Each structure stands twice: as C-alpha cells, then as structure tokens.
Length: 200
Image (tube, rainbow, N blue to C red):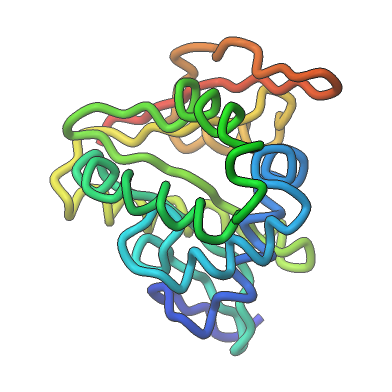
C-alpha cells in the first residue's frame, strides 16, 4: 500500500459511488428504492443539491484506485435539499415512485432525523479488498472535519442493529447509541436501526 489520498466527490466517481453506497445498505436500499438502486444512485450522485449528490461525498483512494467513500450533510443542507431530492427520486424512479412512496415516507419518519447544529452521516463503505486498513476510521475523521467546518456540534447516524462490526467501529471512535428505531416492517422484510451520535 503506497499512496492514500482523500478526495472530494467528482462526477467521474459516480460508478464507484453507486457500488459503495449499495455495499453500505445491500438489503435495505434495494427494499427502499427497488432493484435498479445502483443506477438510481449513479444518477443522483451526478446531480447537485440532493442528499446523494457528489457535493456531499468524500472518497479515499489507494494507488489510484477508489477504495471507499463516506456521505453526509448538515441540517441546513438537508432542509435546503429535501424537495429537490424528492423531485429527482420521482424523475428517476418513474412509474415505481408512487409504489415506493409509502416506504420512502416511512423511512423518512425513522431515519436521518437531525436538528439544528447536527450533521448526518448518511453512508460509509469500503471495498472488501481494502478492509482492515483503517480506511473506515480515516473517512470518519474526514467527515468529522467537514462537520466542524460547517459549525456542527454533533454527528448523528443510523446503523442497522445487526451490523455489529460497524457499531463496534463507531463506538471505538466515540459514538454512542442514543435510541433504537421502531421496527421498519413490510410483508416479507423487517429492519431496525440504532441511532448513534458523537459530540464534536
């Protein structure tokens, strides 16, 4: 392992973004957005002013290869971009949008809830071949710096309660579990999340 570089999101990272964000929620995102979730995320990444935009992403690169990414935004950014995110989802999901709307509303009522002076850590993932190198910690440090720049006082995230590995990493870096979400349930799937936070 030679060069480790931290880079802001760029349009040319769209393919890696879609792969990595899928890795961050391999069961929940297809449930929420449908089977073409990677294509959807690639499209959203290329558009400014939405929750999944390149503007909110930070990537780690090793020897000229993207190894991982983190995505997050502040309360002010969330308020400003909520409507545009919904419009873009409707545009790209097309006919599936109305069918998915109840799930999207339910997800919004449970996940991503932040208040003023908080920063939301939305997604983080590292490709399997680069795990165990401390890149997740490095990305979290970067996102904490970003949150401080935006004058945020704490970082908030949601993590599936079964994702023990991620929970341990967050706890090691100073995040604390503050609540357990209601069960996110449909006919054949169920998900539950811990909300965690870290004071900056």
